[in-house]
Length: 153
Image (cartoon, rainbow, N blue to C red):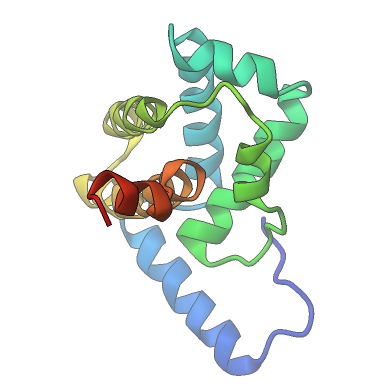
C-alpha cells in the first residue's frame, strides 16, 4: 500500500482518493502497476533496440523498478510518492535516440493490452505515457534555434 505524503491538505486527500477510486474501477491499483512495470521492463530488456539502451543506463534493476513503480503510482494514482527528476536522468543517457520513444510507447501499449483488465485502463495509461514520452523527447531533442535556422530565419 502506498502511503500518503505528509502535510497533505484534506482537500488534496479527497481529490487523491477520488482519483484512486476512479482508477480502481477500471482495474488500476498498486498491484496492477507493479505487474505492469515488472512485465514491461522485462520486455524492454529483451527488445533489440531498447534493451541495450536500458542495460547501459540501469545498474541496479531492483532499485530502478522500485522507483518506476513509485513514478507510475504518482502518475496513475496521484499518489505523490515519486520525487525523482526524469528529465535529468534521461539526459545522462547518451545512447537514447528520438526514435526510441516511439518504440517504447508501442511496447508499453502492447504490454498494457496483454495485462490490463479493461480497455479503459489501456486508454488511461496511454494518455499519460504519450504525454510523458513526448515531453521527454522534446526536452532531449527539440532545439528551437535549429528549427529557426532550418527555416531560414
